[in-house]
Image (cartoon, rainbow, N blue to C red):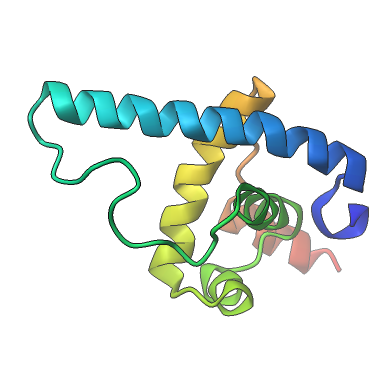
Length: 120
């Protein structure tokens, strides 16, 4: 597991709990904001269920991205998503992961990837 996402199974399990708490806090804040602004259309939990149903799946998806930096097409292929949903999920889950970790994640730019590839 460490080679794929950079964490051992026990480290991953601990992080899933923090990620879950932050994810639920984010959902509650979004709900309360929607109620206050009268823009809420559904009850909590309403709407489409995503393909990454568990918190562990969401976290694994995000950590895999930051460990391997696949394109969104490849990431989507691995998780049965189209590239726009892969991108959208990474953006959403990254902000939640950053709160769970208490730090910002390092985004790899295309130039960095190209530079790394050209040295091999």
